[in-house]
Length: 255
Length: 95
Image (cartoon, rainbow over the protein chains, first blue to last red):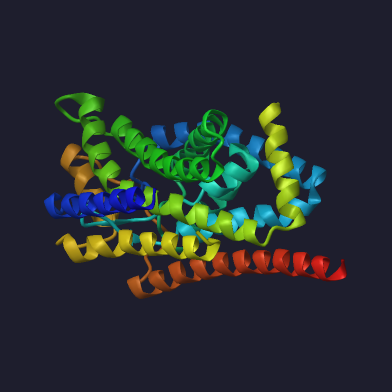
């Protein structure tokens, strides 16, 4: 068992090394959509799509704090985790840097809706203070990072818990895929707004998406690992709050 | 495997994932902003951004703010975990 594990670890390391050596460096765009870089119509469209989720998210947070006030600090923790992770600009295999999203932890804990609020707070902070992302593109960026990512992450978590019952694995894949989904949606948004002259939306999507996916894959893995790490940490200080939270998570499962 | 060992392994993997590209890939590792403009202008040469940020920060200030963002987040996380831990320790002592 132990030998098999170390062999697979070795293979993984070798695989990554080969991948890194073979990969040609290229400049890549792999972060949020910059201010002014979506045409007005699309900017408004994504805002309109995002706002209902934001309202639902506010209501979900209000319900959580009303039903289980003990979990307020956990909500804060989930928000803070998003804060930290989206500040980490990590170099990636394509020769450019990007950052994880950190939405996976809160999604697993509270479901996808509260993340629409927590995630957009982070995006607002970055757009206003850091000139990273933007106000006009906030709707689109929030829709990809705070709505689509968490929804996919949540579906993955539920599905893996049901089929395998291995919680740590489910958390890892939920976080990693929420991260990856965010950037797939971003490239979809960009290719819808900027279809290529020949080949249209699909050609643009392949172009944006190809860059996005390769840049983001190692970061998605990092995000999954970090989410498992903080989950372990919470668990080892096993507190009352965590058991309340887990009861809540199970309750949501039955519903 | 003990939990601490497992956590250390997790952290090592994360660090390796960040450091290996730096060592092995020969790239600029620039931020995305300029590359984004280039890519969009390559597809749609006529596109003009119609809105720009109110101010453009010097890169030193920007990295300070990114560090601040991470620091605020880490502060809250550690406060929360410390609080939970303190609570469970008092509880076991009381028993």
